[in-house]
Length: 197
Image 1 (tube, rainbow, N blue to C red):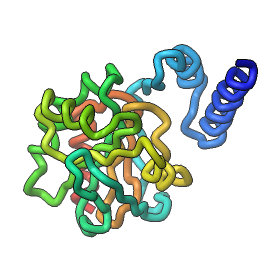
Image 2: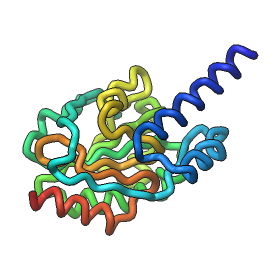
Image 3: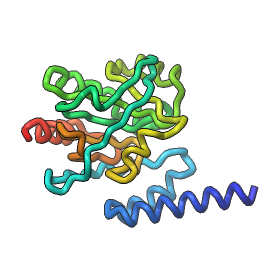
Image 4: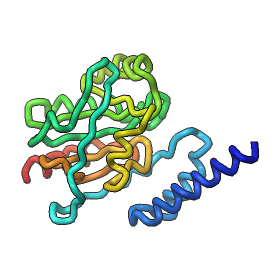
């Protein structure tokens, strides 16, 4: 038991250190992490950040199996804007934003914008049930086993809260991020900016 508590403490300290070093963390987020850790998720505060084109990290390539049994690969959407939402079914903020994300996805369906979820916790049946409940039509990668998608973003703009939503420009570089529930008007503005580039 002591070993497990030590591992949890080390993990918490590591996350706090990573957040501090990333330049995106603040005291409020660290306090929120401490408050939310027992709930099984770290909820963001809805803060967002936009990265000018000349200050973006390298494009991110990622892929993985979806809840429907298909494979999603970012390379299939070269030249499109990709919106990546990190979530899982039992996360209350994820449930709050689900219908708005679907509506925004539908709004941009014919504009060269692809939405994809990255489910960090659930198996296929649970993810599919969530999609059915909220009418989600875009795919979600199941990232619970190997965390390959989260690792792909780890050295770039990592999802520091669940939910987190990232907007990738047409090259696949992270152009913007929302930590916490995605406000539809903010997200739409980010997408519009990425499309206009």
